[in-house]
Length: 49
Image 1 (cartoon, rainbow, N blue to C red):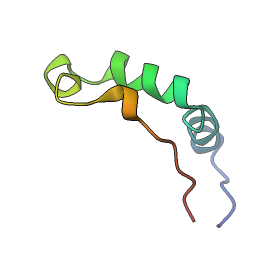
Image 2 (cartoon, rainbow, N blue to C red):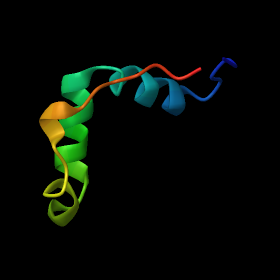
Image 3 (cartoon, rainbow, N blue to C red):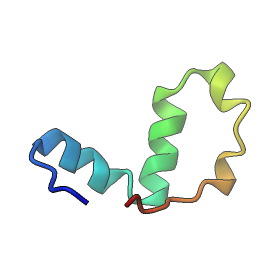
């Protein structure tokens, strides 16, 4: 993977690598009509290449 030079990108990658933080982010920032369609408890965090 290429190095992340932007501190904001690094921050989001770090925070969203935690399942609970990613879940909370989705629930807080996504519209309710979108989150209603999600099975948020089945969220799996995966590493990208």
